[in-house]
Length: 138
Image (cartoon, rainbow, N blue to C red; front, side, top):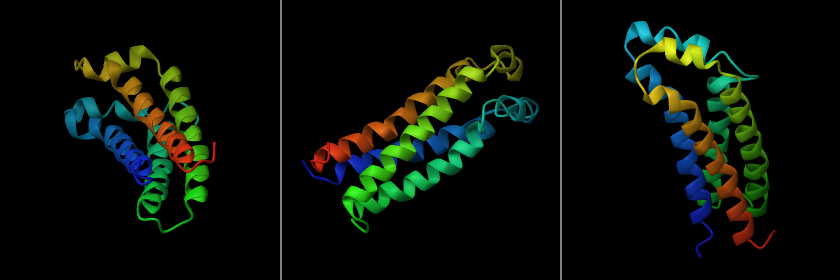
């Protein structure tokens, strides 16, 4: 297996998470989008802070794809940061009050939005673990 596939998968997961965090701002109407500050205000960091951490993960994964940094360093860094992003995303998703989600808009997709973000966040430590395994580190 090509050692660049797992970090590429992680980069795709990271980019998808950032886009997933930003998507409601583009999909919801202006009155509905005003409720996003409350929705995103739950949790220790919230999705916007998680998106910032995820950009660092994206850069690290891309460094692994381009082989600009030692593969072991990238695998370890992305694994640790990926677990942190997953934990923060899960903590936020569990902290959100469902009543707030229902008050934002009528879009049924918003009910599942936070769980989709958790799934996308889980893809990054999974890709990092796959990368470490492909390198024979675990």
